[in-house]
Image (cartoon, rainbow, N blue to C red; front, side, top):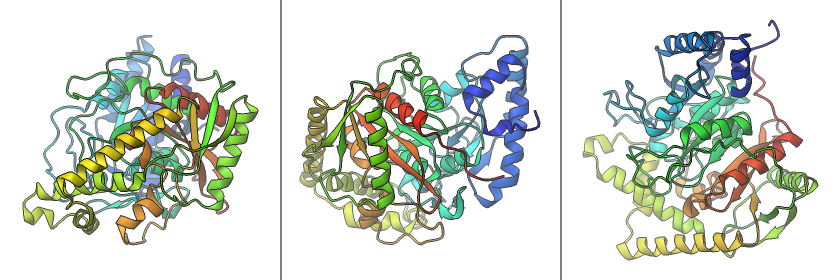
Length: 464
């Protein structure tokens, strides 16, 4: 197959080739590793590669030859963000403060992917403890955007975003406490799903456990649904995960949005900025959904200022992170972590509980809104990615102006939200929109995103 680069196939296409015996998992892995060797030195997507991947791919190939794949992802390459435990590898979290000892067990989502037969090729980079949006960390350095390496891939799932866009396999685990799946997915031209809180079990808990979710980062909506089916399985280690729901998240994904109501949201309780490209993407997505039979109109949820609520969650988490370390280790943290902790972490118990009450009010307002609207449509990011080498300046302000003003609300309210590519921006970098639904209606965001994807398919980054 001279014209086929197996590395950039979708997971579904790979599985079809495996079943027809036109490709093997070893063929695919070799194509991916060749691509990593050629392109990753300029991108820095990986914290560590998995030397056992070839053996796992070989075992998968043997199962396919016998007609006995062990699961729906058998032989498909995937990556694991370095905030997530992968047995036999240290979880460094992008930090010089963490242990080099290997994790004893796989995190629940990794166990789910392995049980489905996925082949882990490595661990991807993250911002330190997942604290910020620009994609760099003190331990591994800067991760760059495959569309233009002068720009950041975004964060905190920076390596997953770069790996997905560069064609380093089709499936990538990200985590999202304020937008860390959706923002790098938006800037790298991927689909990024933050599911309902608790849909995918997590353990050990992250620094932002009360708002953090894990989710798929893929090049297609169907692959995101396929990956979600493997990741979203109950695990006793996570006391807050949802009861087991062994559904196939691909079921119904092609049903469209005819008859659904869609509210276009321009306000999350404060004046979130958005540039002309972002406005155009929302308008185009609204037109696509309307043409597909949805009823689309402007919506106002009456939210409190969610930037205040999230800022206090963020500040308290980072203050707790530093307070739990010996002073000599805390001094090694990204200076921005200490800056946020000092600015936002010193609240009283009353102030923190006030933030929690505001968070509950936001969740209530969104639940009320979803009595009228099946879906909410809004931007994912306020603008395109910043330069990769730019210093992090005034992170307290950047959170609500340059990084995550359109994403963190849905972490506070625990709703599912997905970002889907919307073609190129004026500068050629990817554009995007975000779709959210009521809690537990992950199926609806997948259906809407698939509707947009069918109308406006996107491509892998233009790297050769």
